Image 1 (cartoon, rainbow, N blue to C red):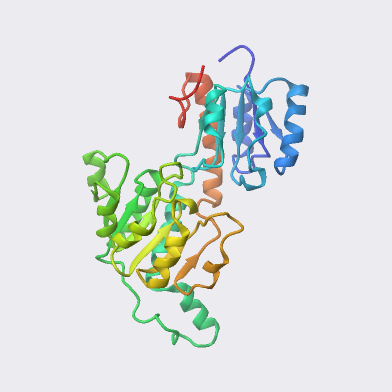
Image 2: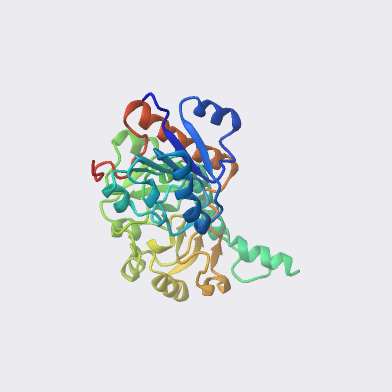
Length: 338
């Protein structure tokens, strides 16, 4: 550790990491909070904090980024800041190229929200198979189970779940899905080691279309980037089995929404379970009216335990970087200009 404690600033108060944890962290770091509730306040207060308390060495971003977007107020971090950490798993809202060019390591959360997000994917899988949204509407309308499409529901046992993106979230999902006797296939940038495939009882598909054509349920669990934007579009839906079930807990823009709407209208996709949509929160209201769509307002990783894990993962990335020279989960380490 350098003689001067690294100056670490968190965007907003970390409410879930815990006082004892933060007290322990503060023994080795000069830690403070940038008291800003939105982008306008952050833009105004960040340069004043630097002027008052000196250069920032590390910047932490908690869960709940929408009020601060777009993140175009990082200028005062340069040239002192060496690392920015985010409590979110996805990072499409950040300008990673800008950080790389300015010598800043960026880290996302790898495991903190993974299990909670997998829980949501599993919930949406069961909800689409059992048509629970329409069942709830039926019983609350006094119609009991007389609404169309409730009986018989689909049983998960023996169906094939195709997981697109076998990272931490995908692995948790595979583990949970096995309890419901679902068969697991996956498509990933890289095939997992054989021991991992055995552990998760997962069969690798060498192409996305191979996975889509051999799955009853397709779950999107990959990050959003230039290569995955509109990854699922017209040809991909056409490749799916008839009456497939489609689950997305990743990012809305991974899916071409126009193509998804056509697949839902035609019945190619029997039902979709969506925790994410494009242009949140000002999403296409068409989805609100569809009987074959189960919706959630992007709640996947938003649980109390996930929040605690996410905040602590941010701080541990900072701790590891300054104590060992290496962050735990860097996204752009190969692109950073030093």
